[in-house]
Length: 220
Image (tube, rainbow, N blue to C red):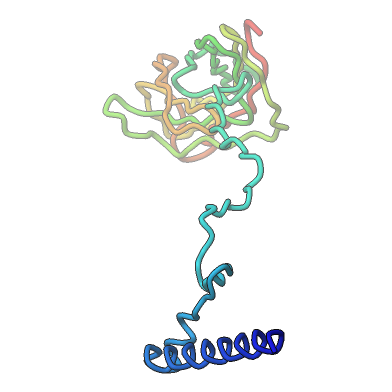
């Protein structure tokens, strides 16, 4: 009789506990949504993990790799030796006349007065002008020739010939210039050379003035 009592009593207690738990859940639930969001936890068990909670460990951005140094600006180039001679680096003078066969032949000499080596190539420009700076006659024409690059070290020179028919022989109309303007190749500013060699043809018969290509000159 004693052995059959304890199991029956234990079963009754378990059934009563289940009924009580069911009643408590029905009274305090407040709806199915509350049961889903706040599940009950029996004593002695671990609470379930809450979904949507981010980890406390900060995320590490992916490595961008080694940083390349910013490209530096290219150094400013200094004028290269052997580049074109500019007007400000040259001096022009008129050489002595070397007449022959009814022609007047004057060398126009360009000298490098700078401290660097520079070059001239081709033909200079030229024009006769009066004291007021007005041009006398048309621009000279170029005599046939093969242009070459002439390197001018400091103090060295190149020359171009300016030639025309003697007006007393040709009968051309003449003028007496005050100066000859000489423009180095590829430059715009001329050099002024005093002219004291007398009359030059400006129009009429055989009045064309010619220039020769630049070549190595005195002091080269």
